Length: 121
Image (cartoon, rainbow, N blue to C red; front, side):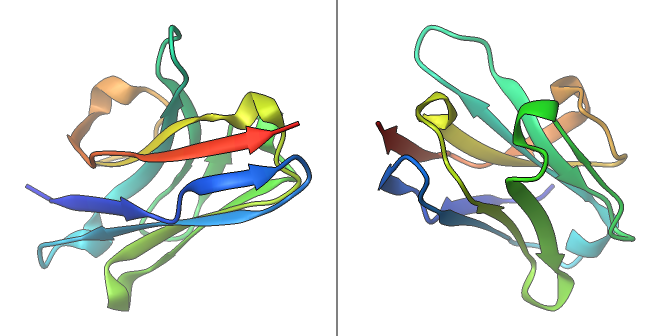
């Protein structure tokens, strides 16, 4: 089991940037694929990005070229650099851990509490 704590959310104007961090407890962080998901009010949770232990990544189409996921296994931390933010990126962002690189949230068994990102127009 992995315990996850997100930080870095906030209020930003459209076109601005934020960097989210997710720090994990446990000694086996490097073995997990880490994902970022988001959920806006009244909508389903949706996949944003994921990175596996080797650095392979996957992104939803709407964030490609704007968001970058990375990880520092020495710090047990995964990051989500978000540039050129848009109002439609407004949501609670959560990180999660899985055994494989996947977009499917059902494969993620450990979740953080989430951090709010609000993008004003």
